[in-house]
Image (cartoon, rainbow, N blue to C red; front, side):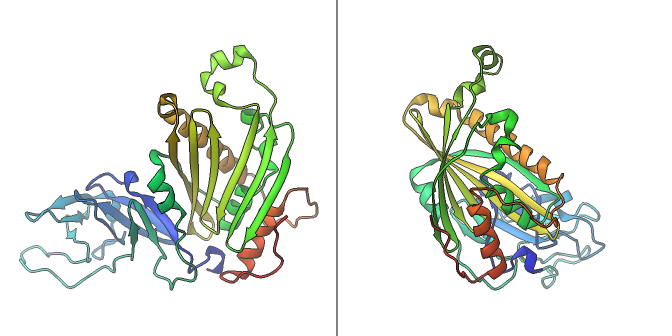
Length: 330
């Protein structure tokens, strides 16, 4: 269980990822839940197994009563369960006592967090609330489950050398010019440049999205251990905050997705929102693919330059929830 870091906060979803009165399955710490959003934007979550015969509530539907309150309905025998886990049995007009224990959610604006029923050991990062105040929400993408433990997923995200391997065909990285890493416990930042080999005009005309790739990718990563990495990008058209989220669904399965926020300086920036989301989706798909092709328990006998981000992850993972030496700023 420690490999899933109980006591850390996990961003289960952005409200935009939930369709009104449509159940959705969410997994955390080896348990499955059904989550739904009502017409007023209130969000609820219950264990996903119906207490009658174990059917998945997420495969059912929602019903709304005369007061506008919604309940999730089991697809097997049509038993409806309200936000407190109560139901009304056939032939009865009275609600039962709670049959399911709701998952405790912490909803901050459009962000739906949970500690998965464990005592909080570290606070929820405030950065997403700050971004939401000054950026507009572009959208979400690349929501997928990867058959890998949490640690390899985090190591991959903080591996500043894998772009010219895993993402070779997309970015064509030619070098890594690392500038700075600041270590502030469970928060860190990395700054580096990635010069790229140019695409030809013919290649760009065949795939216009490539016109967005700069000759040098200026990377500014802001990291909030363990669940969030923000890629800050900037062009003449505007600024973007591409937020990568991670959730331990089970010991050997980790969910990831992207939330994208922007600040437009030129009308073109908003028109390119879908393109930026597509780029993010490709990156996550390539990361997911390589994670399926590694032996995660292999002893590391070789160390490359610029692995400070991975060292930061390992230190915080091994000492969680405490922060120990060394400080890795450089």
